[in-house]
Length: 482
Image (cartoon, rainbow, N blue to C red):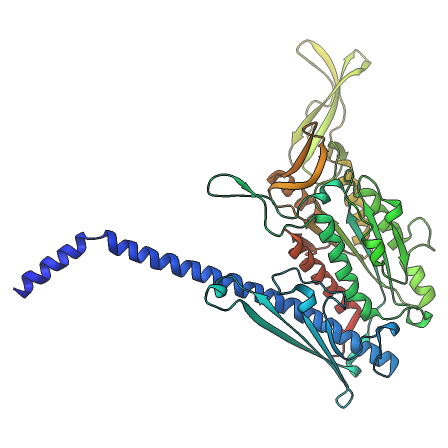
């Protein structure tokens, strides 16, 4: 009896699959959603902590630099220092673009000048909003970081020159994130999308607010160590938005004067950046000259080049070595007379120079003269000239950072109406294709110093890109004694 019962029960259990599978499926789905939700919540928390640590380190380093230079604590912001006590991230010019509760206004920075131990102690704290944990009754997670820098450990290591080359073309009016497609196949506008030019302005101000306090007051000649300049561009360098090189940083009014309009041609501003840095047209215009005259040093040089797309224009052929692409001019002739108005190019792809169809020959009863094969490639002229400037900068020891912003494939909201040259029509949305993205990535990788190309898919990652570049520059110019 027990055996029969067990066999029947097991057999029946094996046949009744629907309910078991449904329960297991529901359990698995619940677990997956829970894990995904937790990952999102803790990912946001991790991002906030990383940003807080970076801000805390910058503020602590700035505080230590101040005490070392002034031999005392700052009493107010007027003399370039940050007084002890509690401040908000917003009041110190820092931004938080992740899901931080209350934004930068509710991220608190506590500064202590510990004269007993000769160190600046900075804590940064706040709360992040949750998704999954909210359903469990916890709608926020706390974060707090601490940074400590000794007054005696700060060492101004090197002079520096920094040039910002910033895309202000019409596509910078697009949102930073593309539309998504829902389960019904309908387009859905992205949540928390930011106009690209607004994201750029905010990020550049964060970058300046990070580095500027560390450099300190440069009104006195003996403290002049860092020079900066800014070049905004569209189809050309925008003269009225140019900030020439000087012993100061671009102001907020100069940064927020940027507007999105026009085509894209990075060659003119990169050519100006090359001239500013290297002084190739005159030995008294380069950054080496200005620093040697003021502080007797040869500066570290940095160019930060940001764009949200490829340069405008049709491709042209440029002679260039090591491309594996060849072309030959062939013209009709009659004896020794060459018909120069009846010529065409032949193209070949191979490693070594072709030898076929050179000189005078006949084909199909007609006479031709084939000229020498030349190596090169098809390129947009703006790309070709931009890369030539990038190479000159890198060959001279300038570190070139490039940032590709909002290049993800998809459809983007324009935030207005513009004339689409390709479609020959007014449109409210712009399309980023995988082909254009690949072209932009290749161009920016070729322009950048090795390993210095950054991908910024949206406003948050644009800030992260500038943050990492700022940290690189600070580590090179203002170091802590080991």
